Length: 281
Image 1 (cartoon, rainbow, N blue to C red):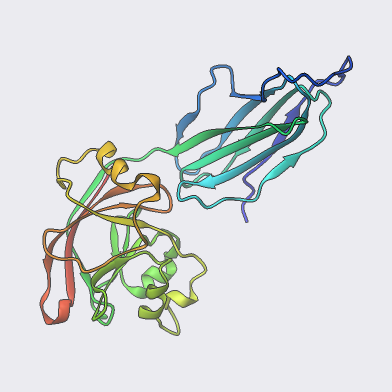
Image 2 (spheres, rainbow, N blue to C red; image 1 turned 90 degrees about the vertical axis):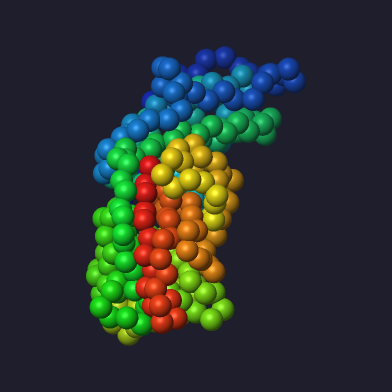
């Protein structure tokens, strides 16, 4: 596992004075850097040093730092319970090798058990893309790929998808129960549908968790805020089924990329092919 955290804890060496509990004191205050900015955009694979300053009127009992991905997945936390100066803590948290949007969460609890939480968002710089006339084949076809990578803007055959599994964001299949379906590799149905001894999804170590929501947005003109609103609050599922011609679907990948899928043709012979446009913002 890549190392995401490196702590450079800068605290005052000596704490002078004796504290007393004061019922009128406030919860700890958390700020980021000199300007207290709460987000920054960086290039893929880059690093970000986040200066965290915590001031407390009542001495600190515990400070926790942890990451979470935009899909809510949390990374194990780092915890501090000893302070040279219990009323002030300054820490530089280094987030490295960032390949997806990451939220640094800071929780500070004082000895009165009052907790303050603050978040710093590190976003990946992205360029809008638009892919037209993408043709995906039903999973039983060997000549057309069923998998799509947003990052690579490419349709992949199953053996190619297995090799590039960290970049696979959705897979197309057709079934009697779900009809024409696009689903994330994390969906348990995908594991059953794309079951192959050599390249099947059940053999993968990485299963991206893209979310999908059918929308009435205009594919060509919908803005980033329009798409984000449709996806806010964790809306959507790891599968969108019973798709039909002219359906529009908003999506958010595990890396935080948002966009739209527009269905413009479902092929004959039990929906053996799916033709879509994909636009990312």
